[in-house]
Length: 250
Image (cartoon, rainbow, N blue to C red; front, top):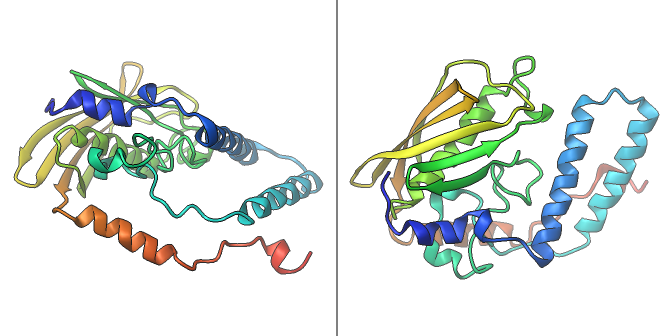
């Protein structure tokens, strides 16, 4: 595995070195509670009346959050592939990737995947719940591809050339089960100019579920800063969505 400044990268990106405190700890707690709601909603056969009660309460909670200012900073990074250690040091003392849709502990959409690394490569651990179901009892193939994109994206960070996904090939070898601890492994295969090529596997125990190969294109100088500026410009003046019940005055 390509190993450039690996200890610095690990110290910034991996959760074992960045325990959450304060508002970040509570964000993660709220996201975990929302994941539990998602899991139980997708599996529940509750009657209409009970579902209506829960929906009303969730709408009330959503309105409470809508009454607060929107987060306009880009704290951490939503995607590991474009992570820049120098920029990360400016926020939170490091990047937690807390809003990533795959590894973000503050994002209820994330399983989340827990990523660690050593001299052998990158390891990702995840258990996909019912919300990720594709074939009966199995993880949706698109979710597997997205997970590979994040794990391989983190892997290429070790080259010191953070970039964005150019291509991603996913090869499905056997059904990937839900509610089962799964393990991703990945390494940098090669570097050619601005192209960083990574490979990875996904296992259920000893059984190979899927493999992937990705080509990442390193960002040109100033590109990341430009994306951050564009994000801030787009978000300026955007209204917080209100619930339908509130809009109708009910």
